[in-house]
Image (cartoon, rainbow, N blue to C red; front, side, top):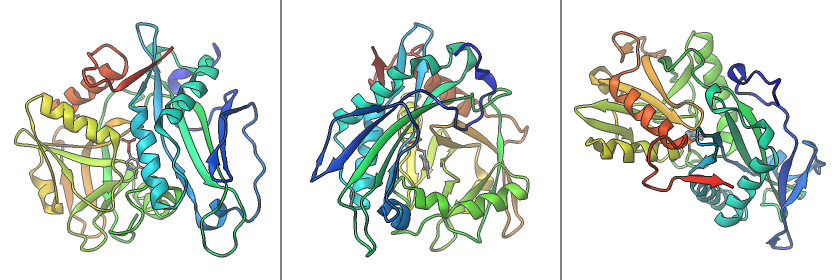
Length: 339
Ligand SMILES: *Cc1c(COP(=O)(O)O)cnc(C)c1O
């Protein structure tokens, strides 16, 4: 794929050659099947269409300077998809087969793996949907798991930099005992209006407070939130946020750097006292926060005084990227090398 402009790829869909699918019928998962078309036939009464029986994941594969191809913590994606499936009464897909399927889809499309120097990567999207018809509200009896890949450009096109966020109080992404802890499309449908509002006000993304009291920080759009203060990595404890694998990994790296880690309620006023803050997730790894504007109260919290990423965000980011690209030791065996 010599002609792809790797550096300027959007976080969008670039067609690749193959996808891999697996069907669940008669109470069991079948064989992995390779397809060379992105299309499929779906029953008009499929449960995924009417009752949002769907679970998805996201992970990246990297072409490393040593020539190897590595995928980050893919077993964790398998486990999280199993948790989503339990929450939506969908059949769990075994971890070892999930890893095999992800490696297979990357290998089949290896010509779309962006070169190391470009900073781009190959995004892996697993998706499970209920495909059998149902008009009354109940789970499907048949499911499809598909994995496809698409090359995505570097998140920071002009280098590691800050973004500004807007607290939106008019909408909630998920309820305290709702589906916020599951990676499912419905949460994203629920976030579209808040995201539009934040963007129209000139911000990168929307920022949520807890749905019940609007007192504590919950999530930043489709990423987790973390803050740095007094040599401590602080991240919200909440029953409505998605357990980010990047966040969990950062907590480990922060500990390894001699920092304390706190998982607790973060009152919105505490934003005034932070030294650094960022959004964490697969797409950006860390997106350092410049300022956060509360669109409800009008208060603006300036996190980065000079508008640049802080030293700890930068250190965590570089360490993390180094592990992904095989240039830092992978002491926790986070990376799977695709042979
Ligand atoms: C996927 C996702 C994240 C980030 O999770 P990672 O495993 O770090 O990619 C955070 N919040 C939401 C709502 C998500 O869907």
